[in-house]
Length: 99
Image (cartoon, rainbow, N blue to C red; front, side, top):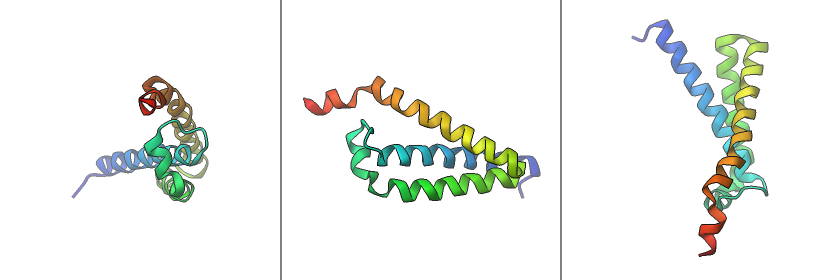
């Protein structure tokens, strides 16, 4: 049996991962995605992104309450959404695809 602290840590880890996956799915569905393999898988990006965002919001609100859970979900989602284009530019996937 997991303790309350371990269960709370598990919920927060899953919520953070769902929020990051949601931002990644929305990035894959956008026309600005620079990773060709991710762009090909982006057809379901919007639907998967919505499901992952709702899951993240539900998990965070279960742990922290409505307002705080909403803010933490959006904060994690926006942080990931800001990092993904920089990570794509840093890895230069378009230059590798041209070779």
